[in-house]
Length: 275
Image (cartoon, rainbow, N blue to C red; front, side, top):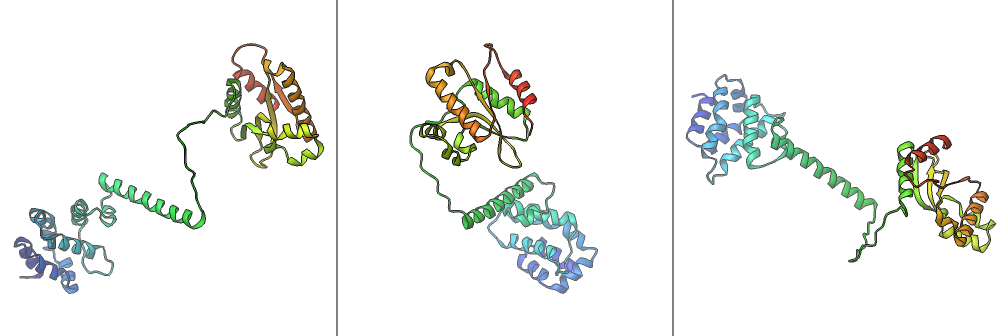
Protein backbone atom coordinates (compact mmCIF):
# COMPACT_ATOMS: atom_id res chain seq x y z
CA UNK A 1 0.00 0.00 0.00
CA UNK A 2 1.09 3.52 -0.66
CA UNK A 3 0.41 6.38 1.73
CA UNK A 4 -2.89 7.36 0.11
CA UNK A 5 -4.17 3.79 0.33
CA UNK A 6 -3.21 3.73 4.00
CA UNK A 7 -5.20 6.93 4.53
CA UNK A 8 -8.24 5.43 2.85
CA UNK A 9 -7.92 2.29 4.94
CA UNK A 10 -7.58 4.22 8.22
CA UNK A 11 -10.52 6.40 7.25
CA UNK A 12 -12.69 3.39 6.51
CA UNK A 13 -11.69 1.58 9.72
CA UNK A 14 -11.99 4.67 11.95
CA UNK A 15 -8.32 4.57 12.92
CA UNK A 16 -8.13 8.27 13.69
CA UNK A 17 -4.82 8.18 15.55
CA UNK A 18 -3.14 6.35 12.69
CA UNK A 19 -4.62 8.76 10.19
CA UNK A 20 -3.42 11.69 12.24
CA UNK A 21 0.09 10.28 12.43
CA UNK A 22 0.32 10.19 8.64
CA UNK A 23 -0.59 13.86 8.34
CA UNK A 24 1.91 14.67 11.07
CA UNK A 25 4.68 13.50 8.76
CA UNK A 26 5.88 16.22 6.39
CA UNK A 27 7.20 13.77 3.81
CA UNK A 28 3.94 11.85 3.78
CA UNK A 29 2.01 15.09 3.26
CA UNK A 30 4.16 15.94 0.28
CA UNK A 31 3.62 12.50 -1.19
CA UNK A 32 -0.14 12.70 -0.65
CA UNK A 33 -0.42 16.04 -2.40
CA UNK A 34 1.31 14.68 -5.50
CA UNK A 35 -0.65 11.41 -5.64
CA UNK A 36 -3.63 11.44 -8.06
CA UNK A 37 -5.40 8.94 -5.81
CA UNK A 38 -5.45 11.50 -3.01
CA UNK A 39 -8.51 13.10 -4.65
CA UNK A 40 -10.44 9.93 -3.77
CA UNK A 41 -9.50 10.40 -0.13
CA UNK A 42 -10.52 14.07 -0.31
CA UNK A 43 -13.93 13.28 -1.78
CA UNK A 44 -14.67 10.77 0.99
CA UNK A 45 -13.01 12.44 3.97
CA UNK A 46 -15.83 14.60 5.33
CA UNK A 47 -18.66 12.22 4.42
CA UNK A 48 -16.92 9.35 6.26
CA UNK A 49 -16.15 11.45 9.31
CA UNK A 50 -19.76 12.67 9.48
CA UNK A 51 -20.86 9.06 9.98
CA UNK A 52 -18.98 8.83 13.26
CA UNK A 53 -18.65 12.41 14.42
CA UNK A 54 -21.73 12.25 16.62
CA UNK A 55 -20.05 10.00 19.15
CA UNK A 56 -17.91 11.26 22.01
CA UNK A 57 -14.56 10.61 20.32
CA UNK A 58 -12.95 14.04 20.05
CA UNK A 59 -10.09 12.56 18.02
CA UNK A 60 -12.34 12.64 14.95
CA UNK A 61 -12.68 16.40 14.99
CA UNK A 62 -9.04 16.80 15.99
CA UNK A 63 -7.93 14.88 12.90
CA UNK A 64 -10.09 17.01 10.65
CA UNK A 65 -8.92 20.23 12.33
CA UNK A 66 -5.30 19.08 11.98
CA UNK A 67 -5.72 18.42 8.26
CA UNK A 68 -7.39 21.80 7.79
CA UNK A 69 -4.65 23.65 9.68
CA UNK A 70 -1.97 21.96 7.61
CA UNK A 71 -3.72 22.97 4.39
CA UNK A 72 -3.74 26.61 5.54
CA UNK A 73 -0.12 26.62 6.72
CA UNK A 74 2.20 28.14 4.11
CA UNK A 75 5.08 26.05 5.41
CA UNK A 76 3.16 22.80 5.07
CA UNK A 77 3.60 20.51 2.07
CA UNK A 78 -0.03 19.40 2.20
CA UNK A 79 -2.31 20.79 -0.48
CA UNK A 80 -6.06 20.24 -0.51
CA UNK A 81 -8.53 20.96 -3.27
CA UNK A 82 -10.80 23.98 -2.86
CA UNK A 83 -13.89 21.79 -2.52
CA UNK A 84 -12.32 19.60 0.14
CA UNK A 85 -11.12 22.64 2.07
CA UNK A 86 -14.62 24.13 2.04
CA UNK A 87 -16.22 20.85 3.10
CA UNK A 88 -13.86 20.57 6.05
CA UNK A 89 -14.38 24.21 6.99
CA UNK A 90 -18.16 23.86 6.82
CA UNK A 91 -18.17 20.73 8.98
CA UNK A 92 -15.87 22.25 11.59
CA UNK A 93 -17.66 25.61 11.57
CA UNK A 94 -20.93 23.93 12.55
CA UNK A 95 -19.23 22.33 15.56
CA UNK A 96 -16.74 25.05 16.43
CA UNK A 97 -17.70 28.47 15.02
CA UNK A 98 -14.31 30.10 14.48
CA UNK A 99 -13.15 32.83 12.13
CA UNK A 100 -10.53 30.60 10.50
CA UNK A 101 -13.34 28.36 9.21
CA UNK A 102 -15.84 31.12 8.46
CA UNK A 103 -13.36 32.99 6.26
CA UNK A 104 -13.24 30.02 3.88
CA UNK A 105 -17.02 29.88 3.55
CA UNK A 106 -17.49 33.02 1.46
CA UNK A 107 -20.97 32.04 0.24
CA UNK A 108 -22.29 30.69 3.53
CA UNK A 109 -24.87 32.99 5.15
CA UNK A 110 -24.19 31.81 8.70
CA UNK A 111 -20.45 32.22 8.23
CA UNK A 112 -20.82 35.74 6.82
CA UNK A 113 -23.15 36.68 9.68
CA UNK A 114 -20.65 35.27 12.16
CA UNK A 115 -17.78 37.26 10.64
CA UNK A 116 -19.83 40.45 10.65
CA UNK A 117 -20.64 39.95 14.32
CA UNK A 118 -17.00 39.26 15.14
CA UNK A 119 -15.91 42.35 13.23
CA UNK A 120 -18.34 44.49 15.23
CA UNK A 121 -17.15 42.92 18.49
CA UNK A 122 -13.52 43.61 17.61
CA UNK A 123 -14.30 47.21 16.71
CA UNK A 124 -16.22 47.72 19.96
CA UNK A 125 -13.38 46.15 21.94
CA UNK A 126 -10.84 48.50 20.33
CA UNK A 127 -13.09 51.52 20.81
CA UNK A 128 -13.76 50.62 24.46
CA UNK A 129 -10.02 50.29 25.04
CA UNK A 130 -9.45 53.70 23.46
CA UNK A 131 -12.16 55.26 25.61
CA UNK A 132 -10.88 53.63 28.79
CA UNK A 133 -7.36 54.85 28.08
CA UNK A 134 -8.30 58.41 27.20
CA UNK A 135 -11.54 59.34 28.95
CA UNK A 136 -12.76 59.20 32.51
CA UNK A 137 -16.46 58.65 31.91
CA UNK A 138 -19.01 59.19 34.66
CA UNK A 139 -22.72 58.79 33.97
CA UNK A 140 -25.17 60.33 36.40
CA UNK A 141 -28.13 58.52 37.89
CA UNK A 142 -31.70 59.21 36.81
CA UNK A 143 -34.69 59.72 39.05
CA UNK A 144 -38.26 58.51 38.63
CA UNK A 145 -39.59 61.74 37.09
CA UNK A 146 -39.41 62.96 33.52
CA UNK A 147 -39.06 66.72 33.18
CA UNK A 148 -37.91 66.69 29.58
CA UNK A 149 -39.44 69.28 27.23
CA UNK A 150 -39.26 70.43 23.67
CA UNK A 151 -36.50 72.90 22.87
CA UNK A 152 -39.18 75.01 21.21
CA UNK A 153 -41.54 77.18 23.23
CA UNK A 154 -44.15 77.58 20.49
CA UNK A 155 -45.20 76.01 17.16
CA UNK A 156 -43.94 79.03 15.15
CA UNK A 157 -40.46 78.58 16.66
CA UNK A 158 -40.46 74.96 15.52
CA UNK A 159 -41.72 75.92 12.05
CA UNK A 160 -39.01 78.56 11.70
CA UNK A 161 -36.31 76.05 12.65
CA UNK A 162 -37.61 73.40 10.24
CA UNK A 163 -37.73 75.88 7.37
CA UNK A 164 -34.26 77.22 8.15
CA UNK A 165 -32.89 73.67 8.28
CA UNK A 166 -34.44 72.99 4.88
CA UNK A 167 -33.03 76.14 3.27
CA UNK A 168 -29.66 76.36 5.04
CA UNK A 169 -28.43 72.80 4.70
CA UNK A 170 -24.81 73.49 5.65
CA UNK A 171 -25.32 76.13 8.34
CA UNK A 172 -25.37 75.51 12.09
CA UNK A 173 -28.72 76.40 13.63
CA UNK A 174 -29.14 77.23 17.32
CA UNK A 175 -32.78 77.44 18.42
CA UNK A 176 -33.62 79.11 21.73
CA UNK A 177 -29.99 79.79 22.45
CA UNK A 178 -28.78 81.88 25.37
CA UNK A 179 -27.52 85.37 24.57
CA UNK A 180 -24.41 84.55 26.60
CA UNK A 181 -23.69 81.76 24.10
CA UNK A 182 -23.63 84.00 21.04
CA UNK A 183 -22.52 87.34 22.51
CA UNK A 184 -19.22 87.76 24.36
CA UNK A 185 -19.70 88.42 28.08
CA UNK A 186 -17.36 91.40 27.77
CA UNK A 187 -20.43 93.29 26.59
CA UNK A 188 -21.54 93.49 30.22
CA UNK A 189 -18.89 96.18 30.69
CA UNK A 190 -21.12 98.36 28.52
CA UNK A 191 -24.44 97.38 30.12
CA UNK A 192 -26.15 98.59 33.27
CA UNK A 193 -27.05 96.09 35.98
CA UNK A 194 -30.60 95.52 34.70
CA UNK A 195 -29.47 94.77 31.16
CA UNK A 196 -26.61 92.63 32.44
CA UNK A 197 -29.04 90.48 34.41
CA UNK A 198 -31.29 90.26 31.36
CA UNK A 199 -28.33 89.32 29.15
CA UNK A 200 -27.56 86.28 31.29
CA UNK A 201 -31.21 85.15 31.47
CA UNK A 202 -32.48 85.85 27.97
CA UNK A 203 -32.55 83.65 24.86
CA UNK A 204 -32.89 84.14 21.10
CA UNK A 205 -35.43 82.20 19.03
CA UNK A 206 -32.99 81.30 16.24
CA UNK A 207 -29.32 81.99 15.61
CA UNK A 208 -27.59 81.00 12.37
CA UNK A 209 -23.91 80.16 12.75
CA UNK A 210 -21.23 80.16 10.06
CA UNK A 211 -20.02 76.52 9.81
CA UNK A 212 -16.46 77.58 8.97
CA UNK A 213 -15.84 80.26 11.60
CA UNK A 214 -18.36 78.96 14.17
CA UNK A 215 -19.44 82.55 14.73
CA UNK A 216 -23.08 83.67 14.87
CA UNK A 217 -24.03 85.70 11.82
CA UNK A 218 -27.82 85.96 11.63
CA UNK A 219 -30.36 86.49 14.39
CA UNK A 220 -34.14 86.00 14.36
CA UNK A 221 -36.70 86.74 17.05
CA UNK A 222 -40.39 85.89 16.63
CA UNK A 223 -42.84 88.43 18.00
CA UNK A 224 -46.52 87.95 18.87
CA UNK A 225 -49.29 89.65 20.81
CA UNK A 226 -47.42 88.56 23.93
CA UNK A 227 -44.79 91.15 23.07
CA UNK A 228 -47.39 93.94 23.33
CA UNK A 229 -47.51 93.67 27.11
CA UNK A 230 -45.70 96.51 28.92
CA UNK A 231 -43.28 94.21 30.71
CA UNK A 232 -42.40 92.39 27.50
CA UNK A 233 -41.99 95.68 25.63
CA UNK A 234 -39.33 96.63 28.19
CA UNK A 235 -37.56 93.29 27.76
CA UNK A 236 -37.66 93.59 23.97
CA UNK A 237 -36.14 97.05 24.20
CA UNK A 238 -33.30 95.71 26.35
CA UNK A 239 -32.69 92.88 23.91
CA UNK A 240 -32.64 95.33 21.00
CA UNK A 241 -30.07 97.48 22.82
CA UNK A 242 -27.87 94.50 23.63
CA UNK A 243 -27.78 93.40 19.98
CA UNK A 244 -27.13 96.96 18.84
CA UNK A 245 -24.19 97.31 21.23
CA UNK A 246 -22.89 93.87 20.18
CA UNK A 247 -22.88 94.97 16.54
CA UNK A 248 -25.51 92.43 15.51
CA UNK A 249 -28.68 93.05 13.50
CA UNK A 250 -31.68 91.48 15.20
CA UNK A 251 -34.48 90.52 12.80
CA UNK A 252 -37.87 90.59 14.49
CA UNK A 253 -40.63 88.72 12.65
CA UNK A 254 -44.33 88.98 13.46
CA UNK A 255 -46.97 87.31 11.35
CA UNK A 256 -49.88 89.44 10.20
CA UNK A 257 -52.30 86.61 9.45
CA UNK A 258 -53.35 83.56 11.41
CA UNK A 259 -52.02 80.93 9.01
CA UNK A 260 -48.99 78.74 8.45
CA UNK A 261 -45.89 80.83 7.92
CA UNK A 262 -43.55 78.17 6.55
CA UNK A 263 -43.57 79.52 3.00
CA UNK A 264 -43.16 83.09 4.26
CA UNK A 265 -40.30 82.09 6.57
CA UNK A 266 -38.57 80.39 3.64
CA UNK A 267 -38.89 83.46 1.42
CA UNK A 268 -37.57 85.70 4.19
CA UNK A 269 -34.51 83.52 4.84
CA UNK A 270 -33.67 83.15 1.15
CA UNK A 271 -33.90 86.89 0.56
CA UNK A 272 -32.11 88.09 3.68
CA UNK A 273 -29.48 85.53 4.66
CA UNK A 274 -26.08 85.81 3.01
CA UNK A 275 -23.11 84.14 4.62
